[in-house]
Length: 422
Image 1: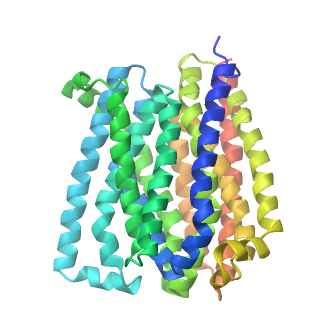
Image 2 (image 1 turned 90 degrees about the vertical axis):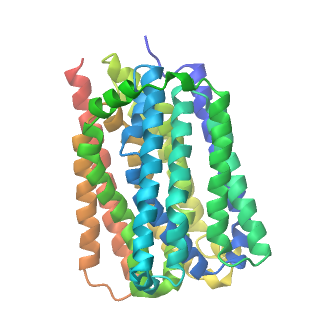
Image 3 (image 1 turned 180 degrees about the horizontal axis):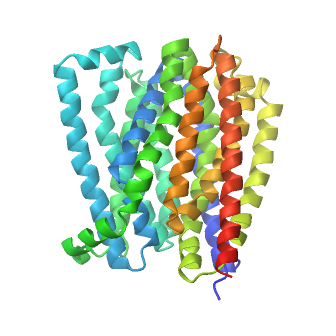
């Protein structure tokens, strides 16, 4: 009988967690230095670039990347990886052609109203997103084979590359050093991941055009039912960066980006660790028609403990600790971060438990929830707000309500699934 609670699986979970914690300590140690080397305006440009790359990322795989993990055999998984890589390269070329038309036509100049260096951001954007997409392909393949050493090592090396390249550029006072360091760090991560892939059990000879056609047809419901809602979801996550920069200025845009950096980004790696370990287990449970709700409980309990610790640290050190870490020019960010962390925590939990939708191929509910989130975030922009602080309060309330609702829906559906298959 399949039993997640065995020593081997617990060891895998702990290994990924320890790697995630170590990888997060690397940039955390350098936050006091980076916040002094780079200005809020630099962080605003980085935040906008990350937002745009996340939007493009939804197209670079067309949601076929999950097939690498949930597929029943290695041949299908390998050809799914080929398919995703082909889609990514093709879309990168299309985006560069589109951007060239924008620049030649002078349309791109209007984007400078959002940030003065927007054109530079657009130039690195397609290639940056391709590096991110292909690195995700590597991780999904390692996840399928339960090669947790490679997953952990790649994550640690990613943080080392981004941190030290950015640090070097900052010390040299290189223009746009923060965003260039981020780009070069992802490029090095891609090259290292490719080396790891070649050294794994990835058989290049299993490439088959017929299998790729089968995958495109067999899993067509992934892009049909989830691509557009996922795009709306990412847009809803991304719009606040653009709106804050335009309505409240680049300084507050940098504050908003930093709030995300010290709340959502670290917490997202905990949910990433769970999805990398549990998605394959969920797929097996569903394949053999066994109960899945106990797995969700195993995910949520440790995340609640992590949440209590994070909230305690931020609330106790929201003034003195963050001011000491970030410097005087970030004064006041502690109050906002200690408020937004509640939304970030519920987002972390939902992201972790939502793997049930991918494993069960229940993509319609997943897409519906993302559409609801998009509508709710649009509502935030329709309500009149006089200050950046009022925006953060309203934004936090809306996100908290949505993610709590989504978590409850997910648990309800898993219990119903178990009853149906018991």
